[in-house]
Length: 296
Image (cartoon, rainbow, N blue to C red; front, side, top):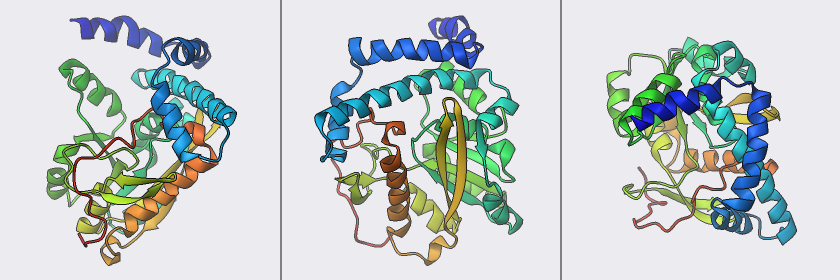
């Protein structure tokens, strides 16, 4: 009952506000989040200091403030996915070169999209199916709240994208190999504690465990890997540019794809660091053995 009230009494009404009103809420929210609540300040500052050791304390502080402004914008922009029209969703996150993916569709090949939690990935995913020839497939972690799990599946998929829980993605691929799909996977978060193997590399000046799933699926099914780079044009407006990262994954060595994905995400972050998810506990201690040398 409480979840339903929150959905219909707060989230939906807010989602119908114009962007300019939501950004007023974002500006107010920034003050409370940064100065009063101090949301994950220790995590954000720690991540930034380790990633940019040559930056001065004042530079780190300014970068953190820019990040919190972006985080608040991301929060109010994410509210719009509950009510935004497909026309506006496409206009606000346009894929500038969909023909990069379209070539593989014409060749009869499914693909995998690699991306990071950078800029507004939610809006990008929502508008993807309408801009691509492939059927978009989003891999996600289910929400524990059963009501909001149903709501989010319906909301994220209402413009054509199929949602698949991450534990079911292998079964989905086996069942749907005859379809031309574009599976969207993010690769910049920490592997879950249950993960038994990850790829280890250096990322943002730190030794880092990287999820191996994208490379695993790409090599198993020989799906080309396309990197999706989301850039911010101005407040509330984004563009996604596609880049072929690997056309023939089965011809690669273990770790090649994961390493290239990591470098592409890292390059984006280094160019405009305030748009990455710094409040994520990316470098928390791992409890499993990391395999970075043996072949898959």
